[in-house]
Length: 168
Figure (cartoon, rainbow, N blue to C red):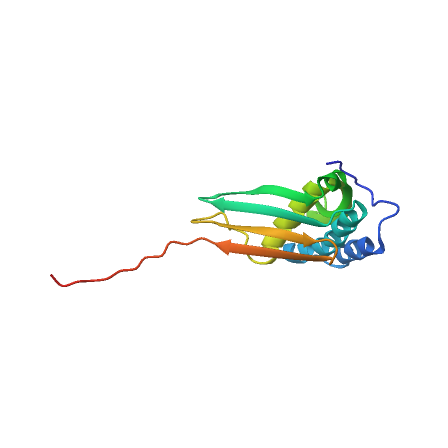
């Protein structure tokens, strides 16, 4: 991953919307995540289309307080070499003014790492963050490149107990 502190000169107009949203007022973490997620979905889809990909899947699994991305699969494999610029929020503390500031910047990612970032954001935005706790859960972010759609399938694991009482 290569960091870039300056917005890319040919950044899509949608990136300016992310920048403006952050500059207008302090956003909640979820609002920041949503603003960057929508931009990043479009950027990753465009990169996959340009690379000739037809589909992409990110599998994840977690249990017992440990969770991770299990794999990123892109069809055809050759499309995995694509690069994409994602919007990320950088925060900095101004000690003199005693204020935290946030700014959107573009960073360069390999498409597999970008898909991982999207998957983690999708998990959070759909209310499944913490899937790794307790009995855990698993899921997959799927991209149908030709249809231009994303979907997240998620399942939680749980322990069930069936109790019966018998007089003896």
